[in-house]
Image 1 (cartoon, rainbow, N blue to C red):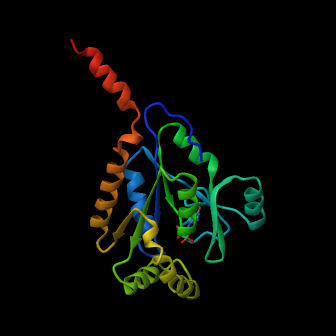
Image 2 (tube, rainbow, N blue to C red):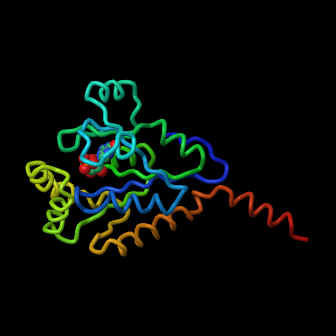
Image 3 (tube, protein in one colour):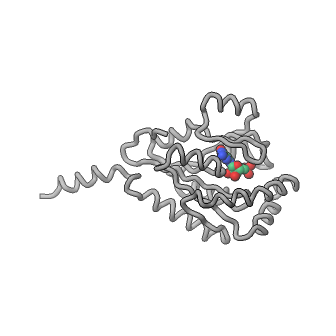
Length: 214
Ligand code: 5GP
């Protein structure tokens, strides 16, 4: 993917993946709440909204025909089938943010992460969130109480296969205690922002330093 030019900062693509119930969505919400320069990419999905979810906030909820038409028009940066539903990242919103030198956060699965890695290897930072135990994962899915028993059983059966993808990521965080896991995530995001390659303004700054010297 060719990134749009931004004079001061080169935005990063922070991709966070995990099996469902590992706490990824809460971690992502807190991160975007704390850092205004980081915006969450809102995906399109063919899944039905859960109680409490709002169209345009958690997802853009669209039907399969609409989703497939958008795929055909090349409107997704990446898309994948997850748990029998289609999910995709609209390209336009991501490119707009990057053009402003801002960062984008993606709460997407390993298939989407792999597609973004292929498209923008230098700009993606991948983080995988692990549950402390599989029992904790199951408990979280039940206490969330947003899915039917059947859906939870299906999601748990898939968790193992998803967890096996951890070596594809740059960072792995075990979400045993929420605040501690969040601190790790926030720290790594800040360090990644500070990488030299993401801060093209430094060259002009150094020229300025030299220009001031007697
Ligand atoms: P849920 O249905 O629980 O909201 O999400 C199911 C899975 O789909 C999660 O692992 C979530 O990260 C992933 N997902 C959400 N949006 C996207 C997307 O746009 N692309 C891909 N590849 N996965 C997504």
